[in-house]
Picture 1 (tube, helix red, strand yellow):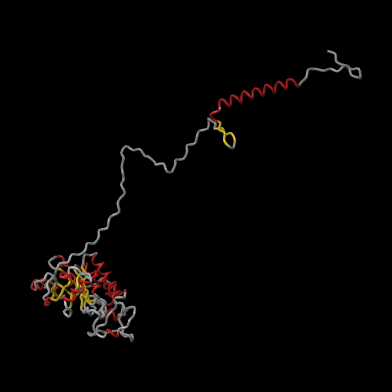
Picture 2 (spheres, helix red, strand yellow):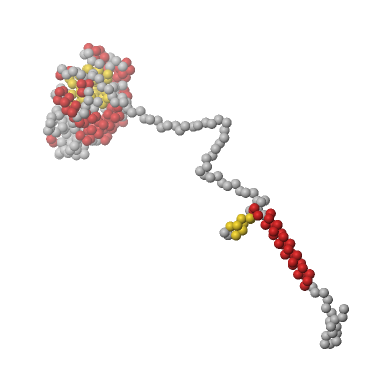
Length: 360
């Protein structure tokens, strides 16, 4: 095929155009891509998610992760037998029962009578069911070998433990009610040892009419020491601890005694605290705390000892009366203060002719 001549007289050759095959290729490629896209949309439609941030594809060949267990979901364990474990209930404390008081008839015996075995015969001869023995005297000495450290330090222990063994034997027999008499704060060994010493306004150690000096119910060391002795007596086998001189001095030149921490204005506070503590300790051992009373409780008069009717009624299991006080008067004021069953709980001298508890 001849072409046109140019201005130089040569023929120009024009062959087939090269753009047409490229165009056809692009069209075919686009058709293939469109078909593939349609097929993809049809096959993957269930796995495509449209979210606010774009399209997400959950590929089918990926395994779905197991969601973590919800904390609140109960864990169920299947077993052949179902066992129910009940929680162990807290034990209910058993309250200490209130003591029941019956009238007693008591006779006083000595430690020597305990050791030689004649105490039981003495009680039988007197028609008594109870014996009373002094286990701590007003000289501070005790009738047994105590385990209290202060007893050894002060040198007040007995030479042997025969009296204590005699008490254990009587307690084992169970034929008699046993009462230990303990002189408390009238104690020259404690006072001269500077343990709660009561002093005059001039700072000197005070002595009563019998020439004996006293310690103080407010002194913690003295109270701890007496508590330890009484608990030993309870463990020895005594049924009742009778406290003598359980408060402050009431007789003699008490007007010269100084007011101090050892002897405060309100003496009922340390006396009541001591008795409350000791009565609780003894009650836990099922042992009765009793108090010997000397002072006349007259209306309008100061109670020097601190052993008022209220203190006695609240803390003493029994109140033993000295022969210098009137049983009828004490029964009246103690009953008014809240002491019940006075015929059993007030122990008067046998010579008073009063019915109920008595001693000689």
